[in-house]
Length: 453
Image 1 (cartoon, one colour):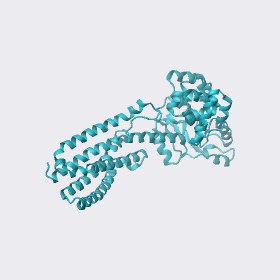
Image 2 (cartoon, one colour):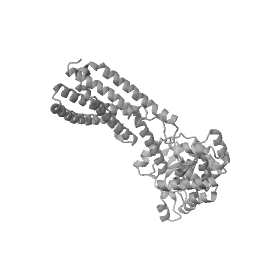
Image 3 (cartoon, rainbow, N blue to C red):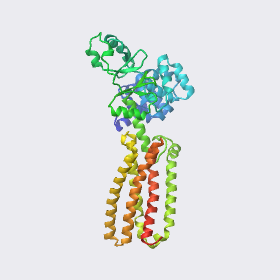
Image 4 (cartoon, one colour):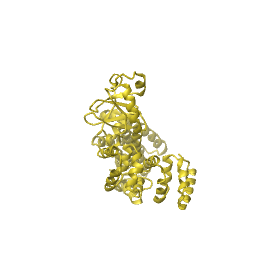
């Protein structure tokens, strides 16, 4: 990755050369840069400047840069590139999964133009097949390019076929073994292939123990399986076991990163997918729902406090601990929900036993509540000297922590049970709810001790 200073220098120099129309010098500056660095530079240029340098790249590098560009920027950029050029200069050099992603970014009419311009009919067919799969399924992220051999071939035939197929594959992680009906039978290592006699049949040396997923398998499950078994590639089969493609670790990394960004935005109270370069209205629309919840929560908090106005007037010391109760309720709730959401997202199997999880959280909540209740008890005992206040704050804090912990645990589990993203439960929602209920508990218990109810 280029340093920020170097990037600034490149951009200024590029802009000067672009204004002069000096294609030769621009091409020289781009020659040794990594596609990710070029994509980063293009992000700081306007559309015409980016188009100028992009059209100077050779086909393979241009296709790599196109994949590195942010999705929203890529859509805007592709709108100014002719369909014929997209097909012949970019798509031709891409793996089928990347090509399908690019085509999916195009308008429907442009998609048809691009597909018609692709000279390789087999590649065009692969792209069309991939576009038919759900975006969040294994079929939607797999690539058609792989190396496969027939179980009835001998080693000599395999080596010739692998040499031919390898031209279409960037990295060979596994050799897949199929039968005459293209059904996946197992995997074969290059080492075992090389060490055996050329007349040895594949059926005698392949490993039948192969982890696979179906085209309909969710991306989350694919990521969990690849992480669990430390796989760099995963074969994808259809419902009757025929080999359809493979998913590599870089595809999974992209998915995990996107999911992490989405969950972080949800926890932060942002709905939808927000990027730094998005327009003001798009960002506002993403933030507004949770800001509205915060506003309604603030109104409800004001109503709760207003209903206990007389109590707070008579015992002004009660007001001093409202921020403490609200903060502890919100923090404990967010901690509990975040742990549960993390467990769900990482596929922890303990999440399949909600009762066990609930018992564990209750135990943690009771211990936590006891410790903090004792600490605040001694603080008030020695500082305030008011036993009613001491008991009120300590008992309220104990109950509020337990309640907040249970609320933060149960809500994500319920959402997960009903197939709703549990990340929605964290952040502003649980914080606001626990703030309100925490104050209600505190003021009700305080009222009983001070005989204000």
